[in-house]
Image (cartoon, rainbow, N blue to C red; front, side, top):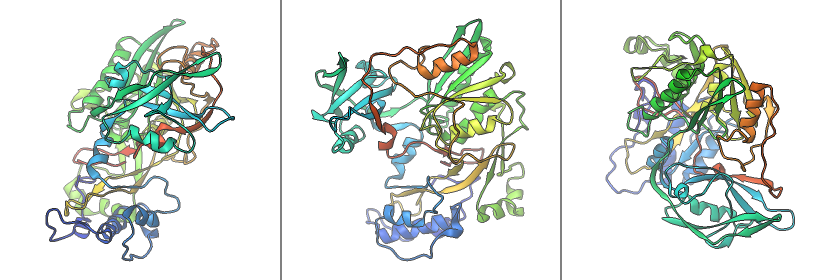
Length: 473
């Protein structure tokens, strides 16, 4: 098991099973008993748990009986290894793009998919698929409201490729292209720093960053992604930007330490003693963290507070905060958790202008736990274990952050194109010059489902800190 919070795993004695041999099938009852012990020790709402009862139910079903009514975000997974890889941006089989689904029209039950962004270096990118590409069939079957779920799930299974029929619009009518076999990327490592550039518009230098999830590295402790993020801000700093547009519309979360690092590149008057976030735990942790035992073992640690960072892996943080009067953040319906932590954490120190859609509203964090005492138990749980607050002790965004300027995320213009709707709106706010985003001729469609809805897991808040080798999601 990954070590949780300063190596604290005093619940292991309770959760570990004894005397297990290799290849022994673990019963649902054994798994459920282990799940209950984990929840009793770690869960933020542990005092609301029902009385322990033996259960042979499927662990997913049993887990739902333990969740507090206010809990939208705790999870259970059948494979610890798989979810641990996903948290580091590693996919064993990746179709290579994200997408949204729409109802084709109100005359039939057909469904159409539109690509929202393509992942770099994937076969899909090499095949010429772009943001805005539309598809109507998967494996030669028309997507409908009856079959879309099973067909879309082929994007995430272990098959090597998928036949996709893309379409274009001619005179307001969808015209299918020839089916195209899209090879999936195997063990794909997605880079969260999707795009960084500087625009010179109306004598203003504007930094623009598309950042799609928070991760330090692909799991190798290299801090590769955080250092790449820092290099992007080094470029912004060297080019003398005076405005920043941070695009988090597709970012549903990730490592808290990466959130701290990103916010540290933006906050004005950066110092190592400036508070970024406060954290609150259940009574078990609160008592332990306040104990003399903990303070003796970790005299320089404060588990209830995290500060902005001035270095990343002994590399100086490239901060542009003193050159900014504000920061524009582009948001969407999947903007969550670590993204919201950055928004909330910056608000006490600078003006944060939101453009796009209302965020999810996740002001809590959880930890990924597996049973390292019984390797035959492959299950993992991710219970909520903390609530976080900014430097002003604010955490009142469970309904999400509403945008200052609502803008629908049309998918017909490429990310980074200054005519793209959300980016164009931000540039207009900066320059004071109204700019109408370019629109291609499209048939109006009703949004149906987001591609993220089909993923087994889509982000959260991962907490990594010195002396911790673990996840908080």
